[in-house]
Length: 338
Ligand SMILES: C[S@@+](CC[C@H](N)C(=O)[O-])C[C@H]1O[C@@H](n2cnc3c(N)ncnc32)[C@H](O)[C@@H]1O
Image (tube, rainbow, N blue to C red; front, side, top):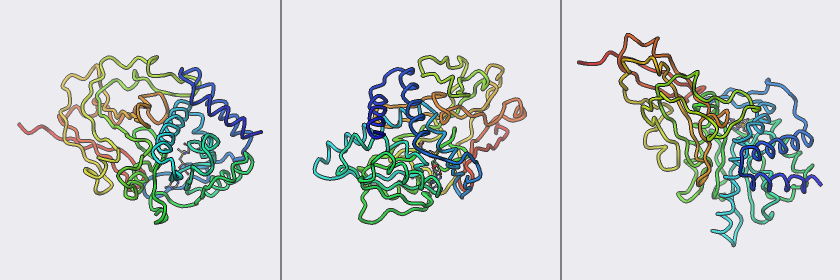
């Protein structure tokens, strides 16, 4: 019975094409998970590791309520799996899902849409309670015949079995502006284990620098106010400065041999009354043309690094992103050389 209900919800998610429908069906998925799972409501099982904070299982469960994130990722994973099934009709598709959380939200609802002989998946989470929850869900929903390995491990250092050639790798372990959570460290580890024709989801993360008025930029504060990109007014005097970096299969290693990104120095504007904040903007291309844009989700909210009022004695700024411990942004400033 649960399997049928989940199948109906996930088909509705895939078919939905307005923000109202996305929200409605993501809410239904959230209700479904709440009635089929028990997760202790505590922040105490957050794990701090080199590379970022792993959310507690209740914190990770709450991610399902980041509605457009959930819907766009499920649509993206569905499209990627459909493509792989067409490309390789004679064999099963190997999936690595790093940071699955207690609901395995980005793969578990899709299982009933693919035959059990088509999917082989390794699901990794550092949190024992989350792994136990996924085990339990598979039984409760009636999906235990699928070939899934559930592994409690650190996805930043995890090594896949040698005979498991990954076709599709999925990880959504991110906070806005790639702060706090270990998306970058996990992606770096996964990429080192992918063949050139494997698919990575999200396919691309774009990190941009802009001078703007942070308080006037669209910002998702709570899920009741969720809006699609067409219903948000971007701040008109936002000054795009540069794309700081892009994380995808092709570009990651070229600028990132260690765990730090340092931009060049950018000229600070002399008159900044209309754009007094130095901000980082995040956008995702999940798969194909499925994108998650500024403030459509918590993970693509803008982030303010510093106000230009605090920098008025300087004329150039360099942005530094460091994910060796808890990922964070900092900056260096200097006087222009005349
Ligand atoms: C933002 S939640 C997302 C959960 C789920 N994938 C979803 O999309 O709803 C991130 C999950 O990644 C897990 N995680 C974070 N860092 C990890 C690490 N280094 N190794 C394994 N799991 C990790 C957390 O425990 C959490 O369950």
